Amino acid sequence: MGELGAAWALDWMKRAQVVLGEHRMELIDLDRAIGDGDHGENMDRGFKAVVAKLDEAPPDDVAGVLKVVAMTLMSKVGGAAGPLYGTAFMRAAKVADADLDADAVVALLAAALEGIVARGKATTGEKTMVDAWSPAIDAARVVAEAGGSATEAFRAAAQGAADGAEATIPLRASKGRASYLGERSIGHKDPGATSTAYLLAVAAEAAEATLSVEVTP
Ligand code: ADP
Ligand code: MG
View 1 (cartoon, helix red, strand yellow):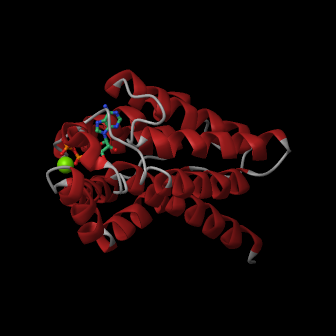
View 2: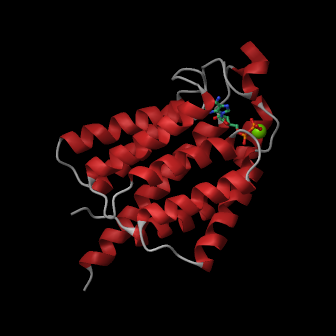
């Protein structure tokens, strides 16, 4: 029996809306430097629409929540990120257990990455969101194999994604719009890797909040 269910998934998305709203300008500026400047707007608009949809009719399991996220992002978010994140959440929905333990967290994140790779064909080192998802999964796997909790797995994933996003700075982009810049993409943090780090950071925060609610009588 895992720790994280529908309440966690709904809280994750509420926190995602907040954090992406707070970092809207930062993501716009990052995308201005190596893209077309729409990533912050895309993500802010997309997750506002996600939360509105979830508020209308909250699904009662994790898979249901992730499916609404996927369909909303695919229909409301343009650019590369909409279909990439949409596919990620759709694949994650397909493998999501009703209650996630650490192994299920790894499976969910790995399925999301498979979706991103199936859609965008990027591998690590190409300065994309893959460079945040991939180390996130590696870090979560270490926790799961050591017998850690789902919350600890998300915390590790969040740290892996943040480190991975930082590590995109010296990379030269070879996928997506930033690849048109060639050498000039070097020295900038990838916007999609950065939004991934924020998304996973709030997944961990929501997990911590879920736990603290459970232990408080
Ligand atoms: P667009 O590039 O169409 O304007 P966004 O600005 O919303 O779309 O998203 C840009 C982000 O999408 C990039 O920072 C990168 O992380 C991600 N991205 C772009 N192309 C790919 C790809 N082929 N594979 C994985 N991620 C990609
Ligand atoms: Mg863009």
